[in-house]
Image (cartoon, rainbow, N blue to C red; front, side):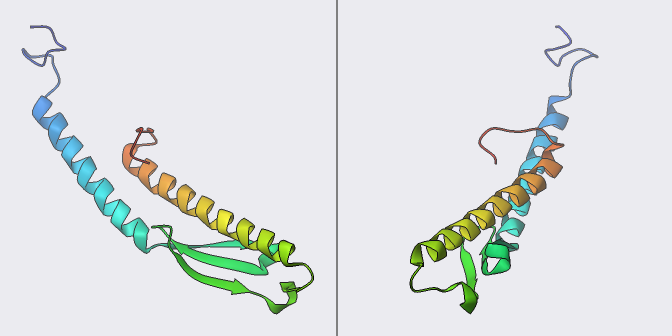
Length: 113
């Protein structure tokens, strides 16, 4: 057999490869569970709007400073809330990608994250 087939002295040890894959799968599942408990904060308006979100994309808390509330300019408040929410979502994504890339050695695996 060729060395690529895993038979004979020069091939990869498929058993070892499978164990490594199973360990990586367990480590990734654990990391995903841990990410759910991490909380990030998205902000906008120089910190006037703050949205706390966990790694499961659930909003934990919304803080809006009184000074940013102007009944005559509701659109600005809506824009600031949307910006803070998008900031929080991007931070969750970045945190997730960073944690998962630690497990995969920086290799991107489609469908995992």
